[in-house]
Picture 1: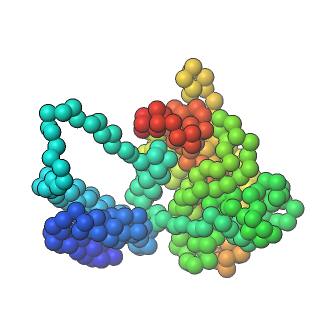
Picture 2 (picture 1 turned 90 degrees about the vertical axis):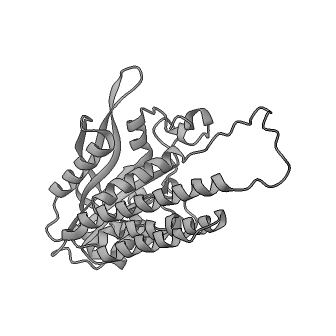
Length: 329
């Protein structure tokens, strides 16, 4: 895998040397640096490396991405500097027109930062459909008929068997159906629940799920991973706790709370997600031997992580498209 990564980096730099126009540069960006580009896909393969080489693979992949991105930006600036002005002459003595450069939305920035952190920890990235069936959204997750979570009034149902997914745990099921242990993935995405909108609830929000399945996996592994993530994302001084809870798909289960300090100095615990050991019924549902393998999973609300990190007190601010708010990040 390391040799494969090195070859990808070499091919990218060699290709970049042949670029002579903005159009060719855009083709290069799409091929190597876009969301589905070769360099980006390389990062998602880190989790497939053996545990012994995973850290080395992560470091090499990030180094290659930085080198290719730096070379791309340098060439981009050079091509812009040498481009020839076409069209009518411009009177350079006139006042200039202000150009405000855009940036990624705060949610997109947060997602990218989360994926980078977990990528360095050896997690691959998995995606899944937002329109789900009953099997992946409920049955395989050990949520039986009659459970309150399956009530049509608590979901955005499309028909008798399809709905907008209410959790990204559905991606965990799809991953385990396709891949056998060891598994180590994170799954970001939008989820939908008809919650009453208030300062901390929205009918559409984003989640980041994590799943680890292997022999000998324990609650200690889960807690240490969450602790490392919180330390990197929020800082070493942040206060957090695990609070016992219940979920049909994990046993034992817990909630992850972060201490939130409002502008007026008021302190309160903010729930950011749930976690726990994967219930044996879930493993058996996807034909993974629960006597041989164990696993843990967590699901964090991405908006709530951003709220805690940046001191945002109302989740609705993320979606109101107020440029005065968005330009702060």
